[in-house]
Length: 134
Image 1 (cartoon, rainbow, N blue to C red):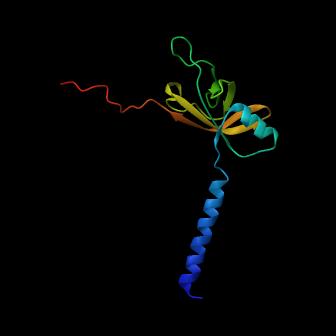
Image 2: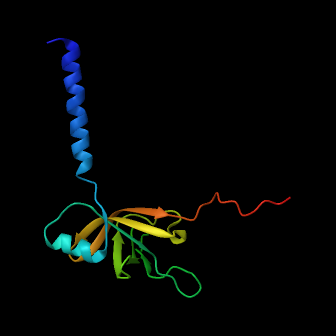
Image 3: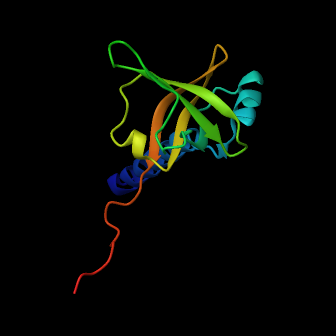
């Protein structure tokens, strides 16, 4: 075999390994109810739950409990079925968390609690034009 053929086979093998490893982490957005059902069936894959943070009448986010050392926090999140769930995140609160319009938590249930390994935020655009002054 020529060296170019061996090199080509190695490139294809690496590409297949990369595709297979990333495909295992992909998942669809589900509700907390679906996530609990998946966890009860032994599904250990990362689960994506999309929702919003509950707000009071003034528009302030409610239900956030930072840890005493500020290195983790718990918060309430309302999913697409209007089910409220407490989510634990073992890292500090992300920047603009309180300003986010929509939140996606990536994680799973551990001991009956949803633990988010990752939090993705959809924040209001900072770059929207408010109007042109002439």
